[in-house]
Image (cartoon, rainbow, N blue to C red; front, side, top):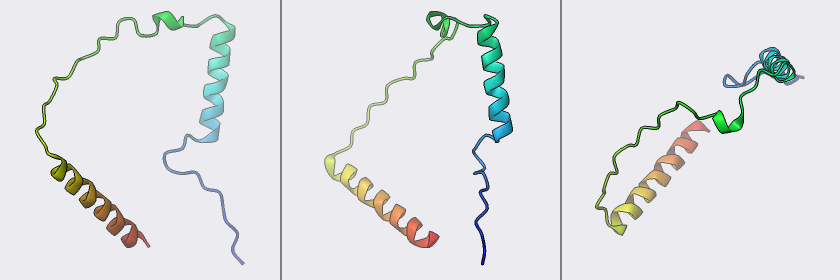
Length: 80
């Protein structure tokens, strides 16, 4: 009989690292090393991207959606 081992996903932060981050944040909060929310975005310049106009009819949109669904289904079937 095999037992399942809980292994973290590759995108998950290791527990020790998460705990250290919480400790650091708590220390910073308790020692007054905080940034007011109102100043959070000061100095950050947002770059506006140009607006792109696309001339596509409903038929093309529906075809693209159907093709995407078919591709996803094929990918799901392949994964099994």
